Image (cartoon, rainbow, N blue to C red; front, top):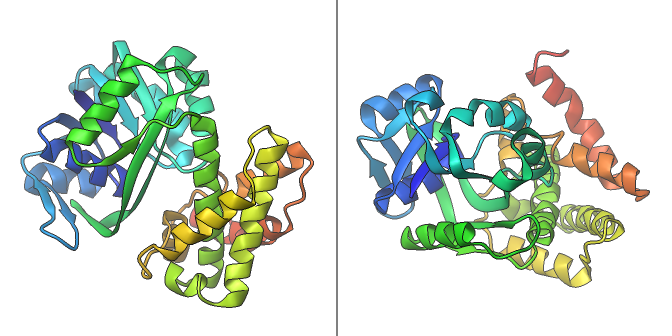
Length: 309
């Protein structure tokens, strides 16, 4: 498949490199020093094993130079989704479709609004990967997966082709029966871990071990499950138990991208994570006291990083 990886940070760099290593035609849409390093030295993914080096790598900051592709995998930050949708138009041929890989539950709807429902699948991923330096992605742990599916729940040949391509690259891949439920299950995992991790400034190994912070994680998960149920998605206590068990299996040094951005003083996805829980809770009539406090604590830091205060 001809693939445009729109965004080459932790998510786009890791999964794009895996696809390119498997022989797929991958074009990385990146910018700045990261782009220049990829163009001159290739894209390197550091892992606990042998790692990956894609050199030479197809990379540009101008989608018009890439030509049309079969699929655009959107791996930008959540606040960049609308802008990226417009910028990606030169990549779109008659059959091209777009799969968002952002954390959160709103990216697909934003893409549908910009590009039309026929072009968009729902998607999510999991990886503990980040840009360590320009041209270098550091990836830890063994949890790397991609899930996607048609928003109306139907099966499709294009989704199956993409699944087969990820499978050839050795990436754990799945087409859930209900992509919306899968998105909310990921939301229930990553948002509490991101918010609690950002407030405590501690890795997952400590957050999940200290009884007080573990209880905070669970209460935050319960709030998201309640919102999902109010919106017709049956997330129950068993979902929370599975999520906590999954958290227990993560690398103890792991942190979320939200936590890393907040700690480093960079703009974060706070609005699409914790802020979305607060906003959707109010829309659904569900109280969210844990997320209210997390959001109120982290918002000044995010606004300062954006130069708003």
